[in-house]
Image (cartoon, rainbow, N blue to C red; front, side, top):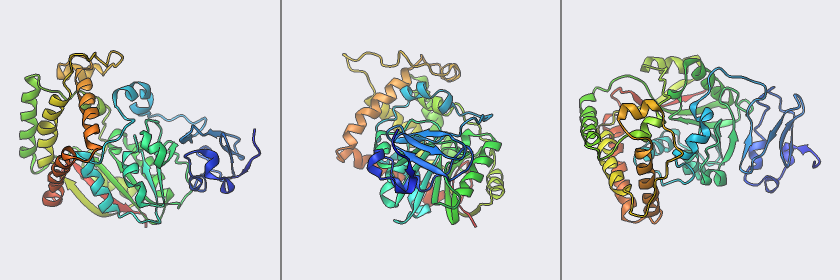
Length: 381
């Protein structure tokens, strides 16, 4: 065992890709103490005597001896989902992810001096895409399906959002993308309360999620979905992987009023709101993009199936009438082949960038019309 030193004195080089600045923000997630010692193996709390090991790219900062009533599918089924979700490599921010990321950067207005937190980061792709805009970018998630680029560029913590391992008033900007729809209301309240605790006064939180509120333009978005279902019934493509990813959506905040109430309970004040009515996006996601995946994801003569170990949920397979793994295989093949083209920033990249900008018209043209999907920025008074 190496000699212990105060965490503020530890050099980044000792801990690989975990930056020194992250240690300066920490508090024990179990007892709340800031009496922490940093060793080459991780962080030790001198108050409750718990250890939080470093895993060569992230720190395990889950609270010890704490049982939570709700556990996300991404935690309970992490090993299986890690095989299905093709998470290690990141493409550029394009299509729906690109629209989200452009809205994040525009509405949250990152500054070079900011300490930013991606709370429930998943692969931490949005943290990676915005890491160069801030002083320190942190990604926090109880599942460790972090992209390789995130391990290299983001300060990562395995942590539960109900017990964030950061001291109060230490974060300038936080964001939550595709997170709240997974949680029951009590978890949402705890998540928002903890986020508010770690934000500095005047700090802001950006949230993208969705409710069950219908869009006033629902007929237009439904038309694209119905066209997509015609292709599904014809066997051209399917939505198996998408159904798998969304199979644990709860949408406890069913209406927009529920969203505003949750922010009020957490002591957060809304400052910016944009709705995503998905008129253009629905056509891209249900028709255009899926047709492209069907072409790019075709097997070559020498390819063997790659999902023999995948076990999608019975519900998603039976609803869609699919054999296990077919849609997931095809979509992953398409994404892997397209990533190679996008990295070269050639015609494929600029074509998808143009499609992304068309999808973003939904925000500029219809952003004031209430719909299920929303972007909201709230502030800690």
